[in-house]
Image 1 (cartoon, chains in turn orange, blue):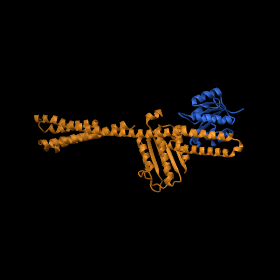
Image 2 (cartoon, rainbow over the protein chains, first blue to last red):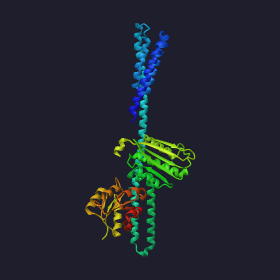
Image 3 (cartoon, chains in turn yellow, red):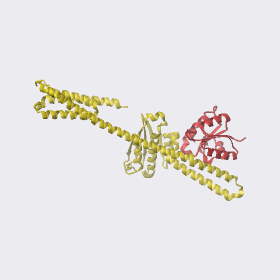
Image 4 (cartoon, each protein chain N blue to C red):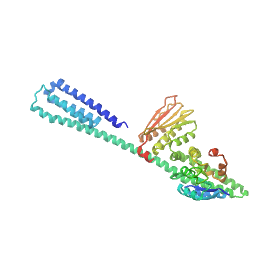
Length: 337
Length: 129
């Protein structure tokens, strides 16, 4: 949102600075540098410095800034030769192409540096896209496993339990030992179904697919062994990778709270801000959490950063832990999701 | 007069077993549908007393199907909708509460007794089973 206007402001500031530098260069050239006039080596050094300055500006702010500065620098250098108190002679004409050449080298070097910088930025974008694809592939694999468990094993187990129940009922009363065995079988099948259901839910919670982030977080909080207060004002759906990342961060953070924080309660808050979603998880435990010490939070940071988001942890000793995650909600995905 | 029931479930194996179980227990299963569209069509034709709808119908949501089956007093295609699932009720508690369904029964606990117990409760407490 702030991109173009910030860029315009930067341009104005740099253009003003360039004009100031050019004016300073003009005065330097016409006063301090007068003694240099006779020395070809110093003129060359002067031109190289100008070319370098142009190159640095072109590299830092792009050719857009480098070229105007090159022009002003050319005027400054030129003024050194055509200063009113110096006679204009044929020797100076030789310096025009030389000066132009140095400026061209400056702009050329700036353009190369700029191109290198852009390539680095592009490769960073490509790396992030690859990381995002890996995260999305992971999500899809989790969803697929959950689906396979739900549609296959779980349905077969509940069907089997219903059949065992029917078989038990059909047996006459005198077959009591067999009836008892079948009853135990039904109980065991139901226990296995429950176990598989918990495994499937851990892999990918169905509520996240069906209801979205807010109901999934509320469900997560209900299943937590310490009281968790959820504040999720916005129930609108977001792209699946964003919902999944936000959910897994909250799930991992709450698991850490239960395991390590010795907290009496936790707070989970989500909010939408412009094109971002923010998730905050806070507890009143012992603090001192360290995301770099191989905890599950390291993986979550990777997951969040793959989506172009950020994860901040504040965990002073004795003051609880606060994890603050911001994830961009891509418009492309939002339109389809 | 037995309860006339429609089963909407994408798992043909479970739907068949549920049908046989309920029939044995005195509930008349008038039809079985594998998806929401078929369920709505059959409900429109058969006007069942009860629709048992799986929450997770593969690509579609049983909660949406429940809303379409029972959009309001006048336009309801089934007198009562009960949601079933292999998922835990706690996980879907708020979505079930927000749906027009009378309640939820875990697939493994489905029986005529469970249905009657749920229907005999006052509407507000049905969802607390």
